Length: 434
Image 1 (cartoon, rainbow, N blue to C red):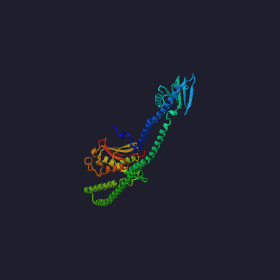
Image 2: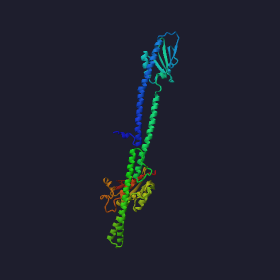
Image 3: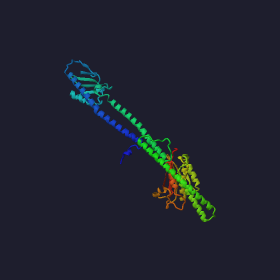
Image 4: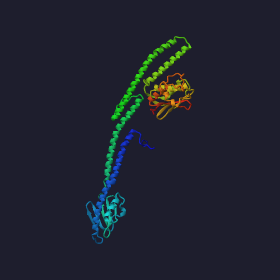
């Protein structure tokens, strides 16, 4: 089923311009059609009737007048109108006169209705004069009339003025539309920047009242989210300080004790608690303290793979220059790789440098995650018992941190079935450097 949105532009500027141009073109077309089909045609019909009346009087004069052999009469009337009675030889043959000019049928119809006989009406090639030829007493009469008396010759001026004013109106509308669309595009740019954790210092609400209200609402939302994130960071920083002190005391106490299985198990539990606490703080801090810059994502991925200490081959693009926070991206890649190494016997990494996106594809042959539970895996502190063993250490924040980091850079993390039989994790970020 054909829908209107399938054949109309998708952009706001193009659609707004279409809203302006379609009515203007429609009105211009209707006015032109009505002007020529009604007004101009009626005026030309009235002029033809006037010429037909004059021609009937001239024909009557020619029929009621006797001329000697070879005697031709030429009379000049007002507005450069001539008529000749009993003409035996034309100065301009009919073959050299145009008979397919506009409104010719109207003129001939009116003339024949008045003169009562078939006749010829043609215009000179230079469109200067009209020749009307009709039967007279002993030959043929001819009336020569200036074209402007027979037809409305300045009708195009109306259309020229209409087109000129229409273009002026469209130009004014386009200028006004540019101002309105520019403010909307600026708002869209600011919203995308806010979503990536960036600021636009020179952004100010502008444009129509509704656009200004939307801009103020987005700025207010950003301020509230920033305040919430700062409160969360401050709270977890306080919790970290409070928990690190007793953890340190416990570690010191255990260090003073002898080596037994119970002591070693207690130390391992404390190490897991410290690691979980570090991940909680990383989740709370997000990307703070990591400045955005241009860096080589491919090199970051290779450094992380080398630090894993396991056989993790990396193939694909040699360089992938992106703009973002290197430490945050490195932490996200490390979380995805550690999951692949932890839960699978074999894993591999593929780097894809596309025209718009840089992708890090990690495949493994592990147990995988069912498609219906893949979104659940991204929830904070989520542990999928049937897919990931609870005996493995971890806090359940790895995928959450990876997706938050990718989305903060304008990208995403997706989970798919892997060709190796396990899980495929795809981290993608915009390739802004190309």
